[in-house]
Length: 390
Image 1 (tube, rainbow, N blue to C red):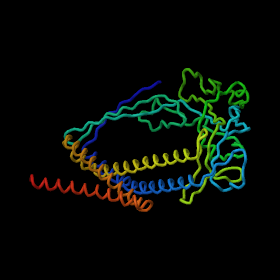
Image 2: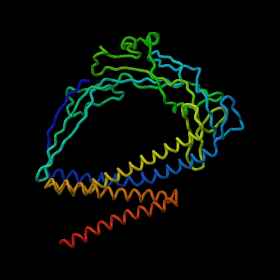
Image 3: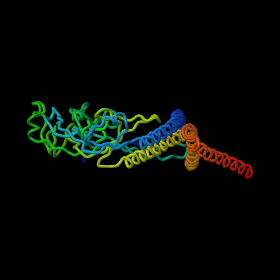
């Protein structure tokens, strides 16, 4: 893949670094504040989802797919069978027509992409020298890459627009036995396979497409030579979602489905490929809920950590007058704000659980309080040690 690079050498004085770090305090404060509602909201979301899934698991009833029973109207039902269609989906621009649940057009344009790496070295007196390497490579991208903001824009200009956009077509009627599947469930069917356009499709495309695009390896190509692409060349490929056996859990409404609204406030709408029992489907959903909760907890902690680090960073910059002192202080600040962020995250989660899970919240709050007290004790011991050695 074609690529080139550009290296920039720069430096900042101790004063300019200190001013930037002071400006960073505001951003740090915003990140620090945002972390609290994120952590609190996440615990409420996790509990609500867990209670809704538990309610769903206790309410779900298994029904046959080939017979729509009116007695199940409004109930949370489990159905398994073949999701299929007699309809065809078409991309009129490129003349592609296929019997499938969904047809996806994927358009990519050959463009320049910029990436950069920096290496900084601090000097006695607090100054800093930075070497930044900008790498430019040609890539296929479905999104427009704006080259106007490149460090070295000259010679790396990208087109202003993409001649073809991505688009999706869904079959009008997808059935599962005697039921009709709504788009919300069809959208959960995400197993795609490549679909190759042929001469028939090319012949059915409009004249402007036939004049500009070439049929190439089951797709279309806009450009002079697919073997040697140039900036601005565009390729179009296709993916389809085929009929498949699925298992779903949803609320029955006449002969179709919708999300089940649980008393806990959450909704239940599950789909998985293959014949999978409702117990296994709920266990998978519960696991996904737990995983998401931990991801958001980690995100909240990181926001708090980075925010606090930015708030205290000016102290390390001041110490950078002697670089080794700044490095030691920066490591100490990182350890300190890590402990504080962990303790405050625990406190926030504990308060949330006092609202949503009182018994567990009390236990976690005790643990959080112990962590905070440990930090206070550690600080007091350090102060006492400093007085003795003074």
